[in-house]
Every structure is written in structure tokens, then in C-alpha cells.
Amino acid sequence: MSDTRWFSFADEVAYLQSPSLPIPGMISIYHSRDSYIETFFCGLVLIPRRNVAVELRLPTFSFVPHQHKRRLIKLTRYHFLGQSICQFAELTSYDEHRYMDADRRIAAERRENTGSIEHEDHVTLRSDILFAYCDHHRLVPLFVTDSSRFSERGLEEFHLSPGRTDTPGATFCYFQQFGPSNRQRMHSVSKLCGKCLLPN
Image (cartoon, rainbow, N blue to C red; front, side, top):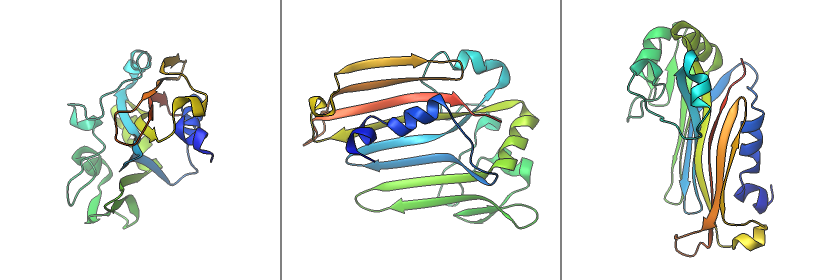
């Protein structure tokens, strides 16, 4: 991918406008990556079905709601899934990187990279468990992202102007913001914040 597409979140914007689920199997529910040139986050938040229209009016979101049934993630040293979904699907922690179901099949996995230059955390969950859990509690999964990318190049080199653009849609909403960076050696920053309704 060219630097211009990376800096402007071209792939992420395309996904927000037309999301698709992977083939049956594991689905990403939490993905963060932090380095000097990027602060990247995407994942899933669960909302009540009745709140979908209201939720899609604003691109911002709350990742950790007060209601424990809506909390998929619980990041600790030995756990990474919320208690409610573990109880619902009868999942047990195999080690700090895997959960197993009652049939001893892998249900969820966590991959970490804690290098000195970049830190990355990625959690995946079996899609059948996710959608069964959502149906049971009358919840809907929303894909969300709140990310920033930094560049040593100026905005004019990307043919971009400073400012914010909000883009609403029937099943998505997001904003993009471009501007000067206050990070040392970096001249410009690109920010994307938004969410979209996953197809089922």
C-alpha cells in the first residue's frame, strides 16, 4: 500500500462504508497497535438493538460500557475475555493466550507483541460464539475504530488540507481529521474515528 493510502486510512474508510465478515471462524474483536508513527485501535462494541439508529448519529463511542453483558474484553495478565461471555459459552482459560469451549476447541485467541518499538494486542473470537451471544442478549456488534497516524511529510505532500470531515450513512458514520502534528519530528497527523453496523 502506498504511504498516501496508509496515512489517509483508505482501507479502514472503505471497510466502514462496506463492512464484510470473514469466512466462518475467528473474528477480530479487539486490535490495538501503538508505535511512534501510529496509534491504532479497532474492535467491536455491543449495543442494544433498539439503540442502533441513535448510535449511528455520532462517530464517537464508549468501548467499556457499565453493563457487564456488553463487555467482550477484559485485558489482564491471564484473562482477555469478559466474564459474561465466558459463562454463556462455557469457555475456560487454557492459558493467557487461549480460551477453549466445552469440546476443547479453540474459542478465542490473544496475540501480543510487546517490543520496545511497537506494542500490539490482537484478540479474536469464534464468530458462532459472538453471534449466539448477541442473539441471546438482544445485542448488535458494531465495528469501531479510533486511530491516529503520523508522518514526517507535510499535508501538502499528501495533497490534503487541514480540517475535519464528518461522513454519515445509513449503516455507518465516521470523521476524518488532518492537521499539523505536535509529535517530535512528525509534521502531520491523520485521525479516523467511526463505526459501522456489521452484517449478519
